[in-house]
Each structure stands twice: as structure tokens, then as C-alpha cells.
Amino acid sequence: MTEVLKRGFPGMKSVKDLPIVQDAPPPGGFPAIRIERRLPSTGPTGVAIFAGLAAIMGYGFYKLHEQRQEKRFEADEILTVRKIVHPVLQAEWDLRYLDHLTKEREEEAKVMKNVPGWKVGESTSRHRWLPPLESWDKRPLV
Image 1 (cartoon, rainbow, N blue to C red):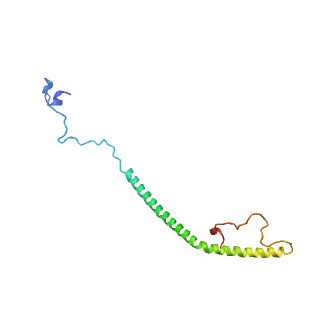
Image 2: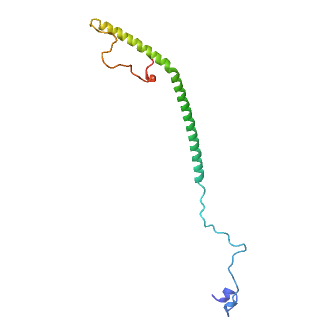
Image 3: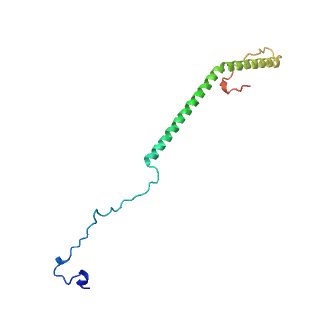
């Protein structure tokens, strides 16, 4: 191709004869190129999760504290009732023991009536026997 077809005039004496064609940005500049990575939000942030879990645990500890107070109150109430009823139950057991002891001595007198020198109710050993001391709340009520 000739210069006439390219530039519209024949020949070129100098580079300075070329028309000035400068590549420049458009008025207002080029639009910004997005180079950062934009990921969509997929859920709550770590701080929100931590705050939520802390709130749930705080509520749980509060309910646990309430439950422990209630159990402590019920246990104290049961203990108070047992302290009140204890003398009555002890008296009943003492009466039962005396009835049992009376029957035992009657049986002993009947069995040992032919033995000379035998004293009913007297200990045959050197130590003093006492009835077993059991916890009153473990004894059967019948």
C-alpha cells in the first residue's frame, strides 16, 4: 500500500508532517476495574455466633442455678420434716423393742423353767448388749 492510500497525501518529508493522533483516556477517565474478590455473605459473623452462644450458655447457667436452689429448698424441707417426726418414730420403735423384749423373756422363761439357777433376762456374757443403732429413716414402717 502506498502512503497516499494510508494517509491521504503523497509521500512524507518528515515524521513531523504526520498528523498528531494521541491515544488518551475519554473525558472523565476510564471506568474503575474491579480487581478485589467479592464473595457473598454466607451467614453470621464470628462475633455474632460467639455472642449468641454466650447468651444461650448464660441462660442455661441461670436455669441450672434456679433448679439447684429449688432442690436445696426441697431437701431442707424434707430434713425439717424428718427432724420433727423423728421423736415419734423413735418412740414407736422403742415400744416395738420393749414388746419384742417382753416376748423374748416370756419365751426364755418357758424354755428354761427346768434349769436350776437360771435367771430370766440376765446376760450370759460379760459384755452389755445394746440394740443396734440404725438410721431411723432406713427402718421399715411396718
